[in-house]
Length: 515
Image (tube, rainbow, N blue to C red):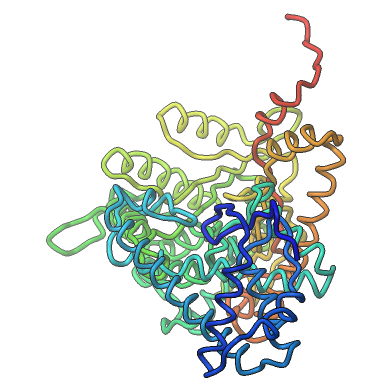
């Protein structure tokens, strides 16, 4: 076995010249560990079974040594060699974690200290964030093994290896590999109105008044978010809050907000009571939680103009048989936006992420009142998303510009089914990396991109099968309880680097004449 000019890759990524003597020494030590001595007659047939090539890793070579020892029937030596490797692997892992632990403690902040998947909404590092950081690499390895095993089963080993290669070479990026949970979801809260949080592992009963709604909503969002790796959207939040306000203060409460309704010494007006509810919910949800590595939950809400709302919730019925009232809900939407915009000048409040849904027709807004109000809020410096559509057949959320609503009907067990949507998994394609690589190897970039897209489709389908397995084993109560519908959750493929890819491709584009 010649070894001239052969370089191997060490565990730290460094390339070093291959040395057959190191392998001979390792095998000799394995023999000695079981009370035997390795002669040349022993070593020659073992070494003859090894096939070393340039660029091979240390792990790959050691795997071959194990196979060679077994093939030559040195079973006790092979076992000792395997145990030695395992012990050293465990020692390296502990050493690496100790090094990471100290580096994290010395880091300037939580983001710079994080080695994997840094969290943007963790402001300060502490023992809780450190505990969350330590197992991340293990979760990444576990997720990749589960997914590649499924890919092998469905499409073969070649595609599984290609997927890992694409990840390592940064052609694609798998969102939130550090969590076993599915990505993000827009939930229907109707099961909570009927059964509380008991079906999803909580212990609270359904809300019965405004106070229990506010406290119960916060608890429900925390529970739901602990079983998601991404955002939790509650597009019915203000509609449900309006319902409980009306239960206590009447359907026309929005016309009497200056009335004093608090008989305590505080003598609060109805408007103050409502704003205090806003404060309780928003500040509670913006607090970090141990279940998410000391992050605040990622919470989204939606506002609607009148035609959009009627399209989504026109058939909606609350458990007591009553229906939403647009006039009071419209007032509450505007009041919350005004309050939240003002509150953000007093405190750093990241959530909720807000989206205004407006129906358009012939390049204009159908609801002029809400078009003007949206413009007014932008003029006042508020920061939110606006989603405009000619059909109320979709919702926008944090990771998807458009979530198609396949079924907008009402169910007396699941509520407004159209709002239950989101992403089970997100894979992002690095367009700039793909285009530049294709150009460097002399391939048409569209041809190469087609291969990448095909791979991501198959990887997502494999992920979907793993998610179904978790549900079959009772590990996804959000689906079973009706908060999320598996059939309405998307397998999302994202893109980044579009502008950079365009700039690097040197594509000739025509320039429109000046107006």
